Image 1 (tube, helix red, strand yellow):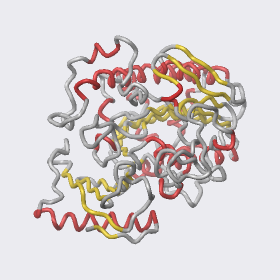
Image 2: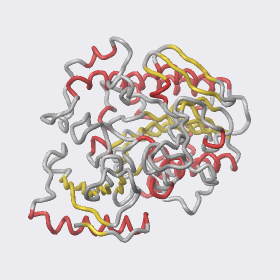
Image 3: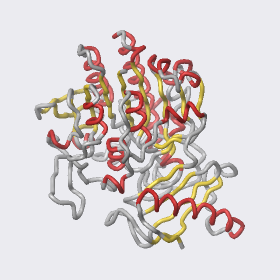
Length: 441
């Protein structure tokens, strides 16, 4: 079974709709849409590290940006697939090689240069990537590096060019072994070098005057100036994704391919803190997540959900075990990732979602069927250490009564009992996942 992971960056769950993503929405009959997929870490590098390793960011030590993924991890996703007869390939943004964080040793900065082979996570077939794609390119073009560390320049809209490389790979693939391909786009992430969201010229006009999501309305931030361009980026990705789907069909491998579309985290447009994510709010954590491909029909556990929506909780972390499960590989015992396939078979997702937060706070959060509860270490921005033994209550939202999360109930005495229940769940997660006996005040 071929597997393609199509990965966007900083894309909100609510951008998947008939206006912004008509192509994806048109795939309903042959797909499974997941309504409650959430990130495990709302920042780029750590989220990616979780996917590549199958464990939470505190366990793989990539708890902030600028920490290299362990080159000696024999159970990294690509390495397990390699051992099980797959050819593994990667195109786009990597963000897991440079060791530039404060205190990181040895220092290594390949943000604008080729990623050393030993830091590519074990991908063994086709490699065309940049560690920090936002520094080597913009919406008008740029460069990445191939298997042999050669600079490969491209001109034109970045997401289109990334897509073209992926389509070319699929078109020319002629090996008997199945392949795993991760297509890692930068869009709709803001362009760091320009401090704005960049889209193809004129694309934003179709979204000028679009209604803002309720969670943004009335809050400070830059959504009024940036939202149209952001949506334009999402819509172009929609067309790109559809083009990949069409290539798979034209290639004649549709019935032997499973394709997953998702993102690393969402975007709150500086309404909740000083930047775009790194918080427990649904705007930061709630993800688009779609599984499609003719190969779904060959997965017994997935068959009954084709053409339907799954409402159970799944974590971004669960991608790793799911991909291995689809491939038929054994899931390493050390993984904290859980395959989605048994969840579909049993009509039941995770009991709740556990989230680690860094670079704005050293925080932990859980999302249950009704509440979001978040805590953070006092006087910490979450960059100096991965874990803490002490947290202070920070956020409590009733997601049924207040889906826009405008009313923080953490100081509301009426919720004392509920907070105690949520605190107990969160502390238990911290103990089991991080092996830390913590306290919440």
